[in-house]
Length: 556
Image 1 (cartoon, helix red, strand yellow):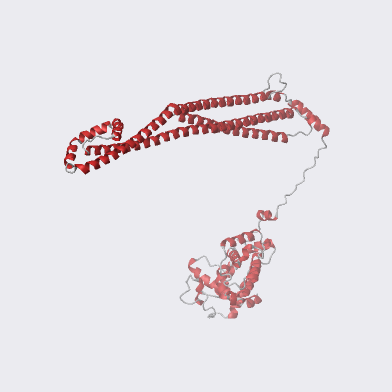
Image 2: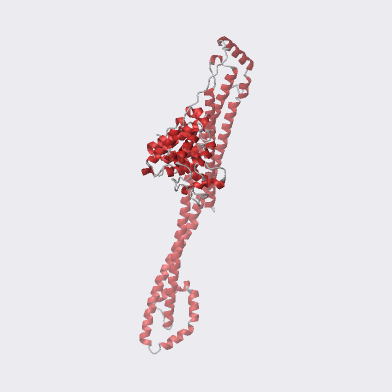
């Protein structure tokens, strides 16, 4: 119990150490922050001419310097708390070592006594067993008188085994007569053997008795030493430890209280010095400010050192934005913008996006299998679209990372043509061109099919009109188109003609190209029922223009 009480005292000391450490950190952080604030404020104060410093500036400077003193007081208080916590922590460690030593001493004595009592119990049990065996042999001999050794052992054993032997003799009284009857015929040799065994058993009983008495004396001696001498010393030491720790904790708390009061008093003296100290307090510092005198001094200094006032109007100065910012502020949109409007704005004959994409394909993609049929990565295509939609003039497809796959370039070109308002071929020329490829001219049985891929079979059928008449009709339709559309269509078909020239490598002949560009150049009408037929007819128109491009445009 006293050891537990000493442990509680040491725990209280540890809690005090933790509190002092935490309080020291709080005070240190507060002092450092206050000191940093005061120094930063003093450094940033405007003091152009100390000789003509205003009363407001002087008072404010002294007030901030007072905060430096307050910060210094807190830092000193933090150092004192840290020293107290370290000292108390070391004290607790030393007393814990003493407590452990006392506890270990008590446990060592307790363990030694327990081990001795265990050995004593074993010796007693062995002694009783030997005595019981000796008693049994004595009874078998028929109550013969023991010799000197037997008598001595019997005398020593009578006190320790009085209850056991008396009970055994009562139980075996009748057994003795039976044993005498059994051995009556061979009383000579058997009697001598039993007497010899009885003598040996008596010696063993005597030895066991001596060992038992020796361990009993040793155990009782250890118990008397522990309970009469050692335990009182241990208890006295623990009591002294408890009293010492409690007193030291009380002293440490008193020292903390005194130190804290001293710190608070130092702050109070800084804020309000004692009478006769010759130093103003914060209230007096603020009271020394003379705002009217400061204003008069400022006006006089300004009138004396001020220059002439420039009354001229301030000119406008336009902000020069970066190139990228100007693009985002005023983008030159091309997607979804009418063809004539964007070409007139950009002063171009053909949209730059078509020119640059065609140049890139002719430089890197003429031998790519499935060119214009393969799709690019949607993220890269959209990235190219955004760049072209800011300013197509600044896009360089030769160095753009998105052009590592030429299908990204063809994808953005097809997207541009799909989103062109009114299509590349105006609606007015749609009907004229499609009229040269009537529905009846398509293969029977599939005129209403939605599969555009099967719309290109049997292209060379010439049932109603001659080739020359179709070429002339196409040329007339193109000639009637607006100039921006006509120039752009001519450029696009010339480019696709170059693509099909490499059909041995890219597998894109006029038929495959017309399947891709037919619905893009001549979009289907608004009637869903005729969409499949319109797609097939538009593909025939594009293929016809590709196969007869020179003849058609020579006639234009």
